[in-house]
Image (tube, rainbow, N blue to C red):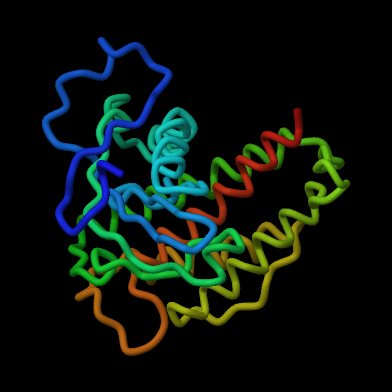
Length: 240
């Protein structure tokens, strides 16, 4: 596996864009790998929510690259430049052991980068991206039918059930950063915005990255954004 190990080494996953459009990248995109026994997550450290999984590290990195166009929508919504070439070169800067939750289908471990200091400017950027994921999710919900296509065995949530799950999870995640609010009802916009604003208020503050309890801010932003986008993209796929 050419992009694994203790030292950061470039990884060049296959991408669909023509090579001439993604040349001349000065620095590779830093990612971390969360390696379980059955599943591996690859997450872009500077882009909270751009995190995908696969059966192997190579699969996870290739899937991460393939989702570049979908995450580009988030970056654009946040008003941030997101060049196509970001998906051309990845450098694995950290590899951490996963858990049963990793194998079940969710990133579960805090990477070393997540515990580093967060400046005021960085915190503002993280919140911009997080708010953009919420906006994208809301757009997807508004454009999706109430009944979504089911899996091969009839599994999966319909739209409103999925929205409720995301909001319930978000209220639960928020407790890990000291925000204690009840999960809002799916049609209670005021309560939804109150929860989101409370999360953004905490994550928008500079931080040392060290916490005695709960989640470091970088990790909280990444985990919340991943969950929101994971279901937004699932909803998009199942609406067609």
